[in-house]
Image 1 (cartoon, rainbow, N blue to C red):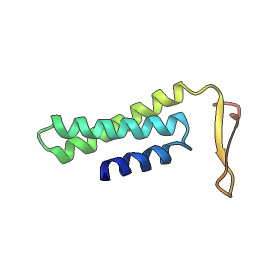
Image 2 (spheres, rainbow, N blue to C red; image 1 turned 120 degrees about the vertical axis):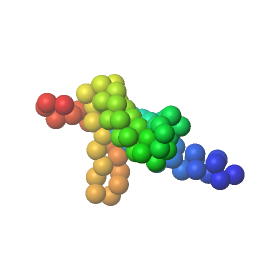
Image 3 (cartoon, helix red, strand yellow; image 1 turned 135 degrees about the vertical axis):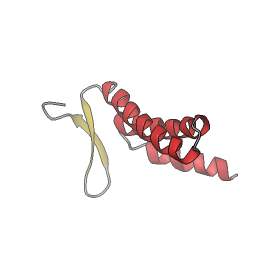
Image 4 (cartoon, rainbow, N blue to C red; image 1 turned 90 degrees about the vertical axis):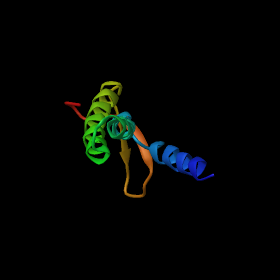
Length: 87
C-alpha cells in the first residue's frame, strides 16, 4: 500500500512539471538507483549517479520541448505559452 501511495504522489507531483523538470527527476532517480547498485560505496554511487542522471535527464527533456513553456502564476495555476526568445 505504501508503494502505491508513493507512486501516486510522485505521479501527481510531476503532472505540473515541464519536460525538462520531468527528465531531471526521472534521470536523477534512475541514476541514483544504478549508481548505488554498481558502485563499491552505495552512498557515493547514489550521489554521483543521481547528479549525472539529473543533468542528462534535464538535457533530454529540454530537447524534447516544442518551443512551449509552462508558467505558474502566483495562485498556482499552470498555463502554457510560447517561450521567450532564446529558448
